[in-house]
Image (cartoon, rainbow, N blue to C red; front, side, top):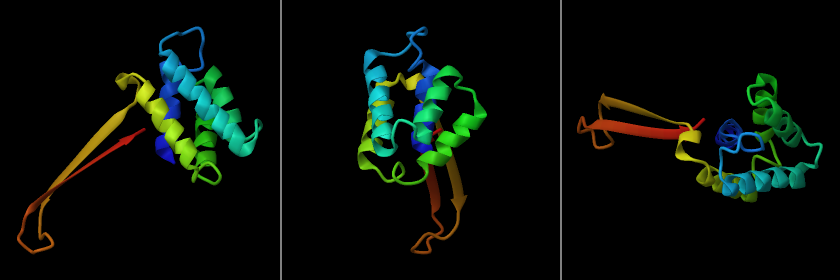
Length: 129
């Protein structure tokens, strides 16, 4: 569930939920509100993910609430909800590219491929954090 947590934390760092910063588009604000509403629909207004986001809106660097958000989103009903995943993807798309942190790791090594031809294999993995 880390990608969802990462996107939510990226959104908060970009200024979503902070009316004083005005650094993100209305589309990002609306997408964030839709995600938060879906979290509440799945677990109630007092659910841990909703409480964590509310606290993180005030202090995005709060490590304890970041951990609580990540842990809560790793279990049902949040971890397996297709609508939540769709809404988070819409939020990611609405954020400026600089707000969503991507890391690319490339590993190259020589060895036997499936056919045993000693091919070089390159693996690229990209994820949001």
